[in-house]
Length: 175
Image 1: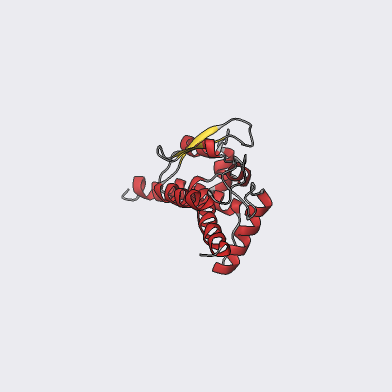
Image 2: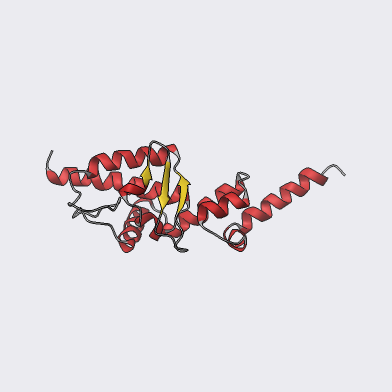
């Protein structure tokens, strides 16, 4: 296998893990890019986000597809990592990927798939899915680093409305 072939495989695995991470965690673009190797506990299925908007670190759960994608990516990235680079996500030179690099990758992959996508779209999707499946407001707030319920209402307005309608039907539908 030529070096270019390995780099193609590496970037495919990186991109898969980079898409799954915000899609399943709801982490902000800067939080995803800020993950360092020492922040990961893949055996425990968690990551500690240290570069947060609030400046307060928080630990969030990684579901199995994300853990598996990260493990595969890490195996492929070992030969490209430049000495002293602690960042999880690497660019093609083996250095830390930038927030703009993440956005550009998602835009490129979205075009390939025929969909419009952004890191923030995944944050909204995760909030909607969590609330739509009956997740708790405190759980969503903790996971997403929010301090008020106003953010839940902003992100999940349509899901909250649908849940409210279903609740009324369930509670009072037979009266």
